[in-house]
Image 1 (cartoon, one colour):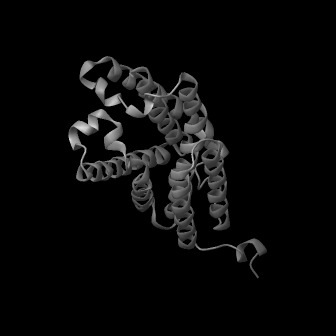
Image 2: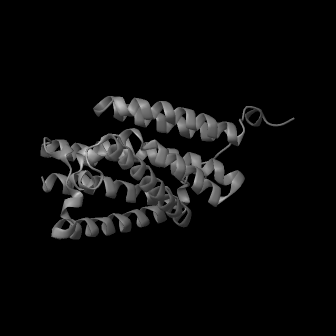
Amino acid sequence: MPPRDRRRRIGTWTAVGITVAVLAAANLALHRWSGLPGLVTAVVVSALLLGVLRWAGGTRADAGLAAGTLARGARWALALIAMVGVVYLVGALLPATRTLFEDRRYYGMSGSEVLLRVFVLVPFGTVLVEEVAFRGVLYGLVLRVRGAVWATAVSSLLFGLWHVLPSLHLAAAKPALTTVFGGSALGAALAVVGAVLFTAAAGVLFCELRRRSGSLLAPMGLHWAVNAFGYLVGFLLR
């Protein structure tokens, strides 16, 4: 007779389906809620998804959180953060690329609001839930049954679709995109498609970092740096 915990396990694809359903609901909630409610939602969803992985028989290693990989992952993360910092600094200083960092959403923000986003909302409200969901749980589940190529494809495609709602007003918010896509409904739609494709491609990179480092900390570091430094540079260039 199988052990009691084995009889309770769900199949891998069932776990994937539950994960996708949870993420669909979370995407709607996080699009509506900001601040503390959104932060709490992100943390709860992250814990729930790790629970789904465990329910399917997954381990911390499947999520990229094995204790033996954390030090290596942290080194990768620090190196990636430093690299992004240099790229953003150079990009902000060069007149040819400076407009890429301008964003009208930052115009009304105070310094304390930006710091709150950089050190609280981005790491715990964005990076945590997205990395746990896409490079942790989804990647780990599919990896077990289909391998790294399928895990990367599924994770990255869903990561791109996750960004549909946040991208709805992207063309109007960033002057550089307004110049390219214009202010029409078609332009807004093309900007959303572009954002989905770009974030799906970024998802491939994040998955590869997870695979090469063996740790979720590596894509977490890069993800935080890209978002956080974007806020800082956008705020400073108002």
